[in-house]
Image 1 (cartoon, rainbow, N blue to C red):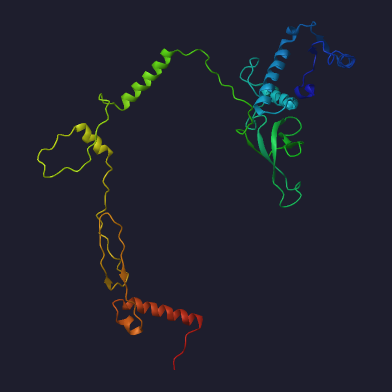
Image 2 (cartoon, rainbow, N blue to C red; image 1 turned 90 degrees about the horizontal axis):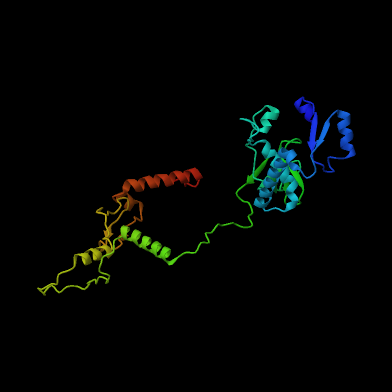
Length: 327
């Protein structure tokens, strides 16, 4: 596959002395295709440093993914595959101004589809798969990676039955990740009494700068008794006490100077004993004389309104066919 994708021939293959690489099947494959298989000296991983370092970086990423997502270690294979995919889209020191994906394909990658490993979300269920119209249109899933070669979609785990599915229509909640513990770094150095006193003094100094405290620590006495107007000698008051009294006293209520008037649309005949006070609620009590006959309505001050009401009512009766025809 590598030869077809790149158009180049593989000439050398370097590996360690593990049995997965050093075996008869590998020797036969290399001899048939003209590939030289190089192996490192036993217990000398430095001779294959690039591959060894890459594997170490991948497993560090896998460890972080598993513990951040709060999933079991059985998901290490999916996390490793996703780590390799992310690494191919990341900048490396071996390549200048391009990432491995761009160096291999010649196209700039699009990383808008990347999501946090282990994120919970809801995957859309196609209507062809639903069993009925009232079935759920989405299923809760966990993100396990991105299908690179097989399909362009997310590798997901169905949390209801544990099966692996692929979907591209997924809504993730990347902030809702389970966390087992939080590591808080605390300075374990002993704290002396001098440091505590300095903190207290600094706090007092800040409070004093905001609201100065008078030197006299005795609480000010408030004289709220009514003075005798017949007494000539009045004791002198402390200006500081007056200021504090004015501060504690509630502000005077401001009343609007708007003059309340009775609405003119009401036909009022008498108004009995309306007492208006600045500090009381006001209620208007009106006695309206309603005419009882047509003649009283026509002769009242609101004869035009009554005439319009009669015409409207008569028109409604004619519309309903309930009007009596006079002889």
